[in-house]
Image (cartoon, rainbow, N blue to C red; front, side):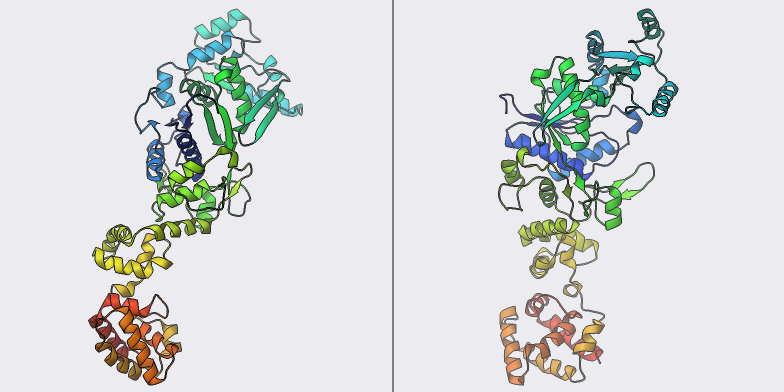
Length: 511
């Protein structure tokens, strides 16, 4: 770690909803900045206007806010000293063209005037010749229309008359390019494997490669933490830093492993989520063109801190066996050296487990306030004190907040009875037995779980019966179900008059 203040960035393109893999990239940048007392920046890389999707930028901002991954500066989070943070706005200020021209002047880039038809013809020609590399490179550029092959006066004339052009980097022939990656160690690539990427277009718009390097330099980024899909671009970026004279302040690189499908076979996609029934996006998303809807973790009932916790452990491991971390603990513990090189398999069941743990950690009072609007929506009582009693009974089995309402018998008497339980447990003599138990219930005071259980045991002893002969009947009569939480606690929540009323109704209704 150098003496420079740590500055990292998350730089998504607004081309659709933010995938959970992108959220993890943002999270690792955030944690790294927090760990080292640095800055975390959100930059929107919208140089490719053809792929721009309306609403995508706001979706990115909303997602980060919901997750609690809040940048120090950037789009949607307040300007810092390096505004603006949208590349389209930076382009308007003319921040990129000067560097493209600097590369031409130093002989590390050139103008290319080839039409799309000529480029396609070149590819076909190279394919027919069975060339290893069919891209625009150190060899193929010699047969194309560019400022390396055309006379200087023709180049000048073309530029003055406004002919369409691009500026391409001039990749050297047969040179080793070395990239030091914090996660993967040294990556060495021969320049013959690289092509002369377009850096700048005649419409004044830079491509990702140039804009990315220029912005990272001007924003004083010290560490570039991004997905491994960018690893093949890293040698090109190293060359750009060198050619622009910025090698001394070049950021350190860390390329994160992929998030894999649950079976580990390939990159996790929206299609996998649709097929297997889990979200791959943080929030619901509606495609503005097709109207297709994709579900999000927030709307599925996940807690943001549970989502963050599970994401952190997809590709990174702590120093011990701890699995549950607060965001502060994650920041304290996080290090890029413990990020895995290999892809991380996504486990939807483990995701639910995380949510369950976070639900259990919340107080009954907090859960009751979260539950009240949902209860109201379903036409159930939203009285906080009653909901807290419901939560005490349902919390251990719940995965999501909505599951806390999965005991309809706590809100209304059963209209139907579990047919399997009735068939197995309710015998011709059951009505008479329940009538006797009903008489005992009337004298229980106070009507609470412990005195009620004591009275029940006395009743069993007096009748010389086992628990299994009466308790299922009691449960069936009061709840309509064959299984559930402690019947004595259920009875306490419902109150004596309601329990008596339900048992009387069951004796009448059941055969």
